[in-house]
Length: 360
Image (cartoon, rainbow, N blue to C red; front, side, top):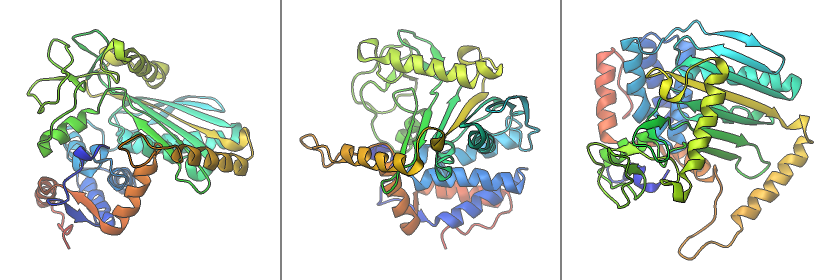
């Protein structure tokens, strides 16, 4: 994430990731989530914060999940099931369950199928928010597999040349292992910026960049501004001339694989609050010797990192490097949370009868 979305160090409250995981788990069980599922959800949320992806971490998503569970918008005990299956493919009805939890179970199915057939693909319908897509894709890495995850969200982004929202942010994630280098982990929304980042900018009082959003008439705002009261997100590329049709079309691909493929309505015709997902695992050994692949990945990724930086830039990186570095730092020095998040945590713990001890 861009530095402007991180909590400034002078106000950040650093908390231990283990204590945070415990608090999240207990809070989720208090709103009806089974303990094993609460652990899975906490794993995903804390992992996002460890990797400095606060938009999908505890501070941004936990309160939304708790609200969804208590209001009935998210089913805390879904009777999810496989409705169609082959040796390499499966379709899942999530029964309104949280994607942050169920995508992990779907990824386990995909990994098992990839182990047997070389590739496992699972399309998931009737679901809810997925969390950080990279987390689910990365589950394939310890199995010497390439992981993929995407989520078809409700319409919150303008499509190219439209004044109305017609696509979701529809993030796509791909994770591939390496040998000695940090794994390649790509995770990006098909909008110029995730909606949660606009929320972070508003919380932090920072300006947003030109071309990230449009006004109510669909006209891109091409100067740096404070977050306006009313705005609409733009697809990546901002305008047709700058390539927004590419992200728009990729968002449609996500709607097809994560929605229509499992029989769910997608995009502008999807019910509000419904999210559909697609996960896949590809066994490297089915294509090439694993050690050979990892060695080649190391050579390739190092070649990228060794490219001469542009004037004014310190280094060249690839997707996954900053997150891996943040993970090391935050495991050692704590996860920085905004004071407002700490206040919310203390209030939520009091409301649900949970001992608050993040500040020990």
